[in-house]
Length: 85
Image 1: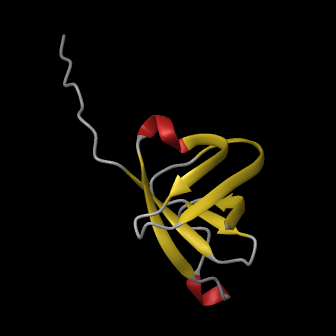
Image 2 (image 1 turned 60 degrees about the vertical axis):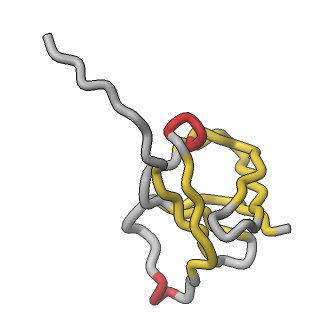
Image 3 (image 1 turned 180 degrees about the vertical axis):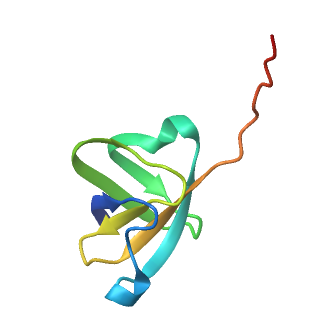
């Protein structure tokens, strides 16, 4: 099983630096706050997130796997409330 050991903020990682994007994962807002969790990727594969401390992932961030490859994170489409005063 693949294991994510760190994360990279959007715009700070580059494929040119030898990092390959292996897969993508779509997570709702409350699912992007994590420390240790098994995630199911869009292609059906799985990645175990195992960080030393909890992190909040943003749309466009990436999970860095043990071998240096990446899994990009996308924010899930969610209903929003439009509140006006």
